[in-house]
Amino acid sequence: QVQLVESGGGLVQPGGSLRLSCAASGSIFSIYAMGWYRQAPGKQRELVAAIFITSGGNTNYADSVKGRFTISRDNAKNTVYLQMNSLKPEDTAVYYCNAAGNRRAYWGQGTQVTVSS
Image 1: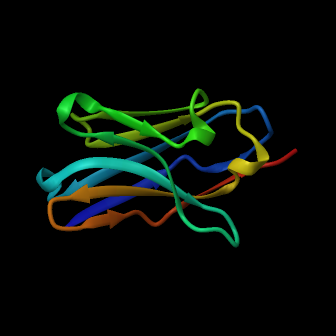
Image 2: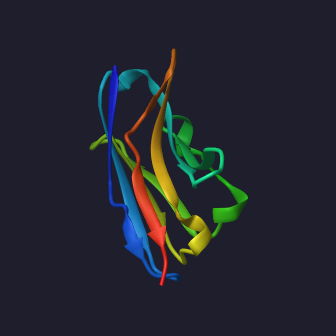
């Protein structure tokens, strides 16, 4: 089992920044990639950004966040970060941390990000 604990959500004005953190614990040896998804009211959950834990740390971003969001990892702390800059109202959603394992995926509890003036 893998446990994921997210932090860093909140309320921010348009154009502002937030940094989300996701700390993994448990059977983390089975994890090969981690990422962030988000789900806005009435919409499907979508991938925001992902990073491979091995393989040189390759990253992948949704088109809507390219150039604004940056995903990074600290393997020593088993933590993945999502730096979100130039936030827009349409970024408002519950953000979920995801860990992809050899046999299954794991999810965090979600953290609310609200972008509003």
